[in-house]
Length: 397
Image (cartoon, rainbow, N blue to C red; front, side, top):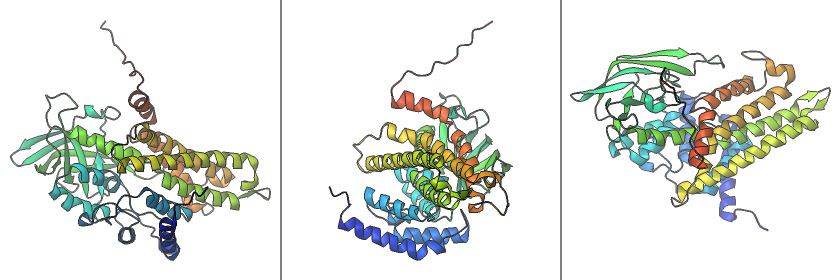
């Protein structure tokens, strides 16, 4: 049985592998907004390894969708833990939705600088009283002539302290049912009236923020979709968000790094890879990574073939992916023994402390982006057709 992809794809794999070998020592250390990160992103787009299927007129590579080529790129980059380019809310979440429902003017204005890393975005969704029940949000926007006037608060706003722009859910029809009175606005983060207060999380970094709006004035045409119909846009964004929080390609890259670590670390002169207990834990995680990768191919296929229903396949990515990454990073910490407890500048850390950082970061993502408990409800009710969770009834005294 011949399971190869054929000569066309093998030639493509050789092309990708040559790029990886020529550039693996030139990878940037910077992230969103850094000059080396932006230069690397542009290089990847130029060769078709990032923004591959985004049309050229919007700054992408312009290739036709191809599941196998996407898989080959992921495999070859993951083989050497290659930097796959910039991500974040703007690239992973807003851009595909703008390409689907944005106006031509919005596509021209926002897609190119976003995917090239020149425009950093944050997401204004959660509020102190509207987290899992997002549609209960109270941040309001009132139309005053040609401008929206926004007042309210958002919380858990990732990268707000770094962002140039925000895509934000606001209530524009206070008397409408809660899912029908929401609009989706885009505006600059340096607009007068915006205050950002950092929130330090368990990684000891301010990955989240509180954001306060006081009479923030936004041009009325900076709205995606129709007024009062932003919930549909929000749901599309949430679908992309849940798929981007723990992508299987990144898990494969981290798995490769874990394997290298187990081949180097020893206890009493024995490699951890030769310890049956740790090797069994590794194989269990490896099997789950493979399952997520094949599930990702199913999702890629459904995006190309619009008649194919992804169904439950897309619903499980956030739930299983975040828990998988948390366990994967935790295994790395375990095999390092007492060194695994070191953090923040300790010279004995492995990988610059990335294993400890990612372990705590993904514990946060199990909660963020819709808690995994909520995600289980979504899977059971929408994916499996099970009865809705009963709501508590409070009797009047």
